[in-house]
Image (cartoon, rainbow, N blue to C red; front, side, top):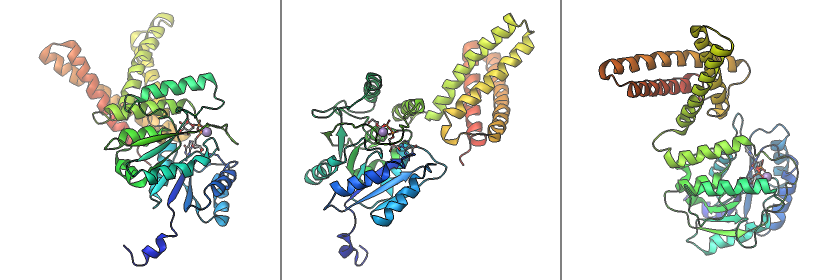
Length: 372
Ligand code: GDD
Ligand code: MN
């Protein structure tokens, strides 16, 4: 241990609260005030991880740091994502206990001291989850529609999680930093569901307890939950079930490619029957349509985190089209070669398609959607 570190130890935080933020300027001061109140007597720090919100969230947090030195801000530029923000926040602290909570006051801060006590008194426990689905907890004022989506998401989580965990969708929990460090290198870190990710990624089953709380209504600002969150969740589950065999980006790419084939056929038949184009022109139009469709959807979903916008959208379309044209030549070449040698048309076609798809995926992931 560094000399003198022992004397300093008494001043360092025992508990770190990680708060991911995206456009939460109206909430950070009130949340900090409440943390100060309810954590009096404890050694704690709050780490806001903000994805460069345009409403001044980060500067509001920095203003708070002037009054509360145990409050700080990590400002991420050019990145988005609740889970990855939490991971970065947790990695940035030395506190032995780390909690994650939302900035919008929907999570009950009064539960934090009890969570900490529970972890400190039961050395077996890895994590304590704030739960809306154990006795005493509730969803608060949720619409039936959102409650039903949440139930479905919970059911799906049983693909990768123990059923005994009642609220895997919770974004409110506290864990030992050591338990987090055990899982951190295996995390997918995509999307919203950091708790599902942690449970599914830990090398040994996490020992957990659930404590009830009532989900409150949002204080200020708007929810960031949108259809992309649902897609990210499916990608997370795919990664945790088959991700060790096939990269999920490839699965997504192939799935969209499959849809593209349907679109191709629909366009082709329209051009042929309704517009009475000659086959060559019709096939060319359908190919272009399918290519633009594939590019657009992959850009929005598969590579959302590396999305191309403005003029880069157009140059991306160009490199995507070139790559896929070469892929198509490879596809036809391989399929014809196999067909000539084995005379099995289904197998030959599938092999051609597979080689083409892998080629398209590999080349476009490097050239069209290269990591910034
Ligand atoms: N840094 C960062 N980056 N923070 C984000 C991002 C992002 O891309 N997206 C959302 N956040 C922050 C929000 O600012 C908020 O503090 C917190 O993450 C939760 O986002 P909300 O938009 O308020 O989500 P919600 O209330 O619909 O969903 C919450 O409740 C669900 C049900 O318990 C979240 O806690 C979910 O994780 C949870 O499943
Ligand atoms: Mn919220």
